Image 1 (cartoon, helix red, strand yellow):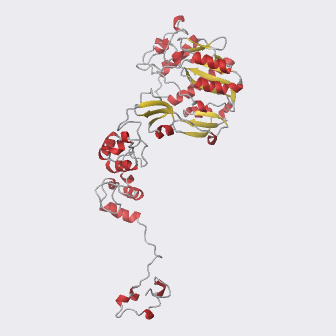
Image 2: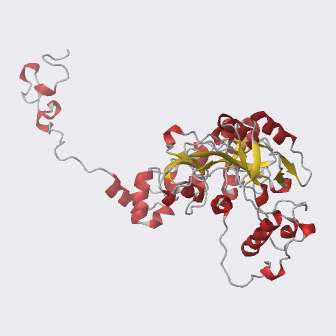
Image 3: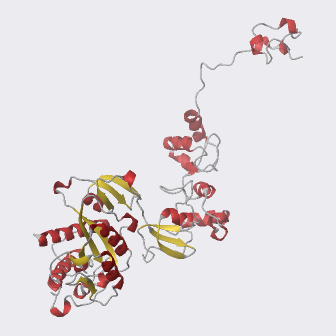
Length: 449
């Protein structure tokens, strides 16, 4: 029973975590070109079992299967968010990085089959009086077979399953142990084991990095499916401070573990939640067209210099160097965005001539598309799409018809023509002011002379 439970936990964890990184592939009953088949995967021998060093996957003989996509480590829960949930079982689950090939010992400590330095781990074990044990109670050779089958069908390198362990100890010390271990480079992740509920009926808050926010009322499985971090059953977002650290580029240097707010406040370029400076798509050579820069066409700008449309960015910065002048604290401000919408090539999701206050009046003909009133411009453009290219007389007519409020028939200026003195043969004598004109005199009761 304990073995089944441990296997279920391991499968639940890795299925959920894989969903966030899953790259859909068509399923096939026969091996696909470039991928290994079950027939050509060698079974683990005694010399290729638990004593074989490896990098990024569980075992050498799995790693050596040709054509496997490399495995990317699962992002850690930010240390500040590691809190004991209400439905905790009293155990931690830890996974060491694949290349460490950590294994628990009979006395509850840990060793590395690749001679990795685990002195810091041992110090934490001693400090918090905890002990480690296998999560999946199978020999390494059995786990290697499981990894090989998974690699065969997925075409991807697999995690070192034997590097997953239970941590048990005094309940009051578990949170401290979890946070200390989570900070180590040799540790891939640490989580609190939670009780498994039938029918998955209990929910809680979930911090979802891809959304950059917290989502309420998700089950643990649903949270994992979104690639999120479950905060515990019964938790609510209003009590949760979701922290999404990532890579930050500052002055051509990269710093890991920085929140978006902190990165932008320091004049940096934030690469996104749970990104890492070692990621291939994190390039700190910032210039026009860099992915880490913001949208060229957002009115409020992106907080940094440059923008992500290279052609448009080059055009605007040639005209207005401030938009790209990082050496003198230049940045992509609302005026840069207004110029981009006005001058760059209109496209879906790109420049929008209706979003630039630099454009011509909606009520005057001009030879650019769009006009300076965004609401009116969008109304007219919907009625006549050609107005997005050139604002001709027909566009002006539509603007007058649909954007100008009709006069209020009850708001009529009185006709004072019969009462105007310069239209009478001799003008007015102050004593002979027509009674109908008296209420409209600027000074009541007397003439101002």
